[in-house]
Length: 200
Image 1 (cartoon, rainbow, N blue to C red):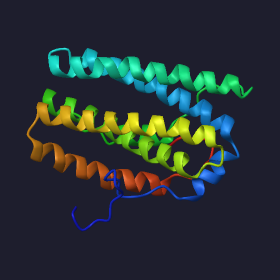
Image 2: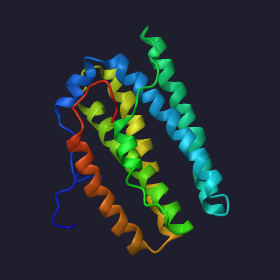
Image 3: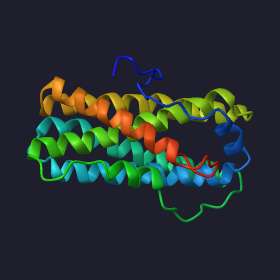
Image 4: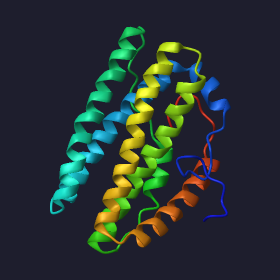
């Protein structure tokens, strides 16, 4: 994996820089999709707590993330209202669906937990990368600040999920599997149409 060029977040494939310009032209769609991403993140963390109740350290570290993600959902809804934009219904998330299809089945309980933690880490890493692009290149100064806050939060979540996975199984196993996810995620990104109405 060391020979592969990565972004600062470890992602193998960077987002096409044209995405920000396309997204800015459809900012209502982006904000709606962003809101749903935060809602789904909160729901995923709740599911993770249920699945991992026997791991006290996971419950302790993921519980605050539930509250934070739900707070983010409410903040994005507020931003939509402030701009007089409609909160649109959720759309099919091809990126997340393809990522979830990579999850290994028929493995040990520990491996299953690691799979779910790594998928969550990957979604947070890609979200963080896109929030960073918006915070740097969107022309609306208020949204630059708005997305910088989200970028910093998602970066923390990404690291938390990787850290938790290493507490469930040996670090070498976790990082080998993470590298496999990185390569597969890059292929998913290549397969998706560049759209400005989606966060992913």
